[in-house]
Length: 83
Image (cartoon, rainbow, N blue to C red; front, side, top):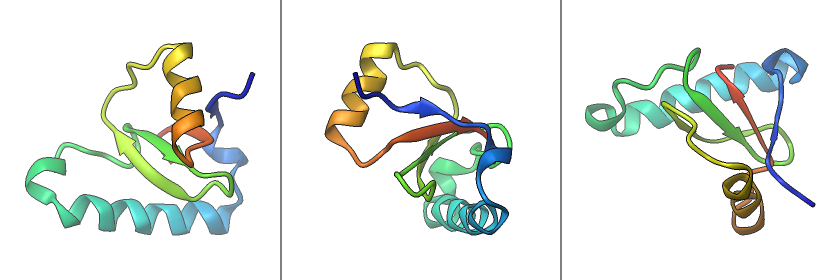
């Protein structure tokens, strides 16, 4: 069954990792009041099929069922802790 899979950030190509850092910082800054606690090194980061940043959360509270539903209803395919 298809589900969102965990990936080690070190397995993402360096160019993509650097692009993701910039995208995450922009995403945080767009709503700094509500996202100030987000940290690109400790938050859980969600990626699309090309390992490009899609979203991030402070804590990951998804079950296997939740990860499958996320896969089915969004373009998110991978996640990691930090970049």
